[in-house]
Structures are given as structure tokens and as C-alpha cells.
Length: 105
Image (tube, rainbow, N blue to C red; front, side, top):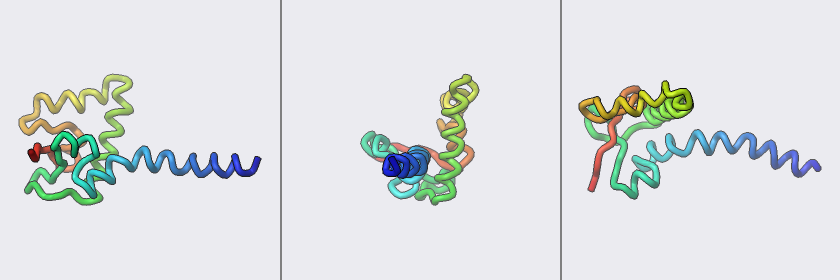
């Protein structure tokens, strides 16, 4: 019984870390998620095209997850639709973090 409780508590701590840390960590360390890399996309600083740092990645992740959460009520979807009308095709999470997604191939 105790083993199940310990495993449950470890999962309770690790699941949110993995879920909320996946995209920000990969944006920071690799320049994109595995899917973005496969499609030849890279997340870079909007000002000079350089790699983003951990802080930018965390800000981008927080706003990204907020857009997804509020997307359940259609409010957050505006952040993604916004990219269709913004000149550099940046969503709210890109604008908040000062990033842009570019095609590298």
C-alpha cells in the first residue's frame, strides 16, 4: 500500500513538471519542440534571430499554456488567431516573450 502512495506522490509531482516543462525546455535548449524541428521550424529572438534564453522560454510557455487553457472558453483562441493578422505572424505568446518562429529549411 505504501509503495502505491509513494508512486502516486512522485507522479503527482513529476507529471506537471513534464507537462509544463516540455515545450519551454525544448524551445530553450533545442530551439523548438521535436515536431517543430521535424517541420524545419525554430523559435528565435525577434530582435536579432538569435537563440532564446530560459527566461524568454518560460514567459512564452506561460502565455502559451494560458492561451490553451482559456481557449476552452474561446478567449485564448484569440491569441492564436491574432497571428493571422499580425505582420510577422506572431501569436500572443511570441509577442510576450519577444520571439518569432522561423523556417530554417
